[in-house]
Length: 328
Image 1 (spheres, rainbow, N blue to C red):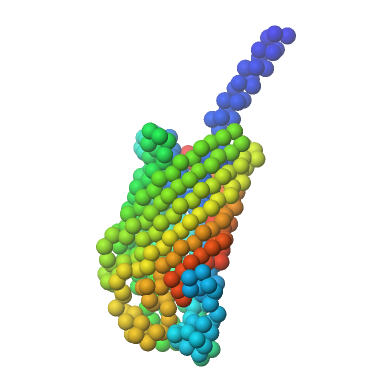
Image 2: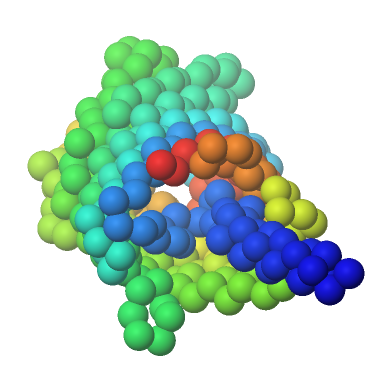
């Protein structure tokens, strides 16, 4: 009997150790959070992320604007108003750990956008753009206090000469339809994750800092993010998360000379560099799912609960992010 009890005790110890060493669904943050974890020396991870953002209706500050409040035929100042925009991003990622202390991360995005417009005369038209975005390379590490930091650079691989047909003929598309920044940018962030028996919680702050001016005489505004989340583990395979996210986008500096005529006649607010900034507070819910052999699936859906924009500017309606990850 003692031998049976002792054998069962050893088996339980082995099972607990295996569960502790096995990948947990909340080992990774919600899929909308980047650079949240590291890998062991020699380990690789490849990933694919899809992000879809829907924007609908114009805002000025925190107030919604009707079309007539934007257009000349009402109380507005513009000949054309954007009404909706859908943006999609497909991102391939590669992570590799040359040592236990440092993990390298490469992100390659492909973006596509479609924007709908209405003119003061009542006609409607749409424009589209798609291309490779700005590729980024980062290093991730953890300091002695357990804070995970990352530092990287974004390369100007994205196109900023997107054109499409408009009522004025084939034209250079406005700022929000341009794919790349045209500058070398610095990416920096720091965060902390605390694991508990039933789940984990984390925080992260992150900045995207533009360096210099691009060839078209403007600089995209800096971006800042602060996020916090809690993930509850329902099993060793599935966790559900809730996350809050604050985002700040600065206005652009300088002005693309190709938009001078459009600015002079108040053609459309999307060519005004002073109408690109704003701030937003989102709430998101997500799901992480661990599959066999190092595979993971994840989903997150977020909606703004408050936004304040330098408008007229399209407000965000919703964001959905889905991803697959495989470590080996």
